[in-house]
Image 1: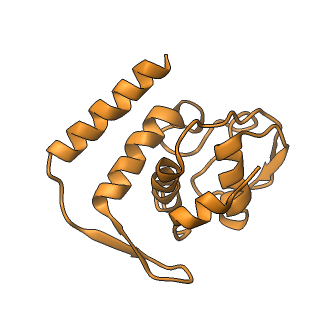
Image 2 (image 1 turned 90 degrees about the vertical axis):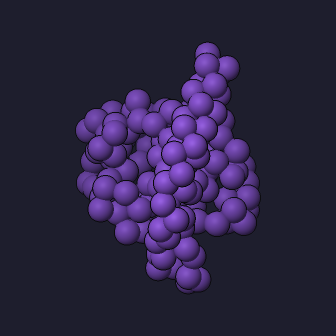
Length: 144
């Protein structure tokens, strides 16, 4: 199954890269000005669809009481390091998102730190979220 996912991600990445796309960039507000390329956001979207969408849905709204929303999530906005830790290593810790408690298991994503940067920057800037961005150094600094 992991091989199939890997092939899907590689093939999807190839298709996105082969299409050329635009060279548009998005500047997000953080302590530092970081420019996210459309290519990086597209790669993050491909990874999101492969690894996250089954639970958090294409809309980012999740399934109330089962899978928390990422769209408009106060938890993601206010607890970014904890969210990265959950995705990186998995978690069974209860959390409260937008006033709703979630007690489900968040499995470790199996993504590399580089892939986590792409996915998080996609999520932080999708569905109306304007939550800034993360850097590779920030993700690498998150330890068990």
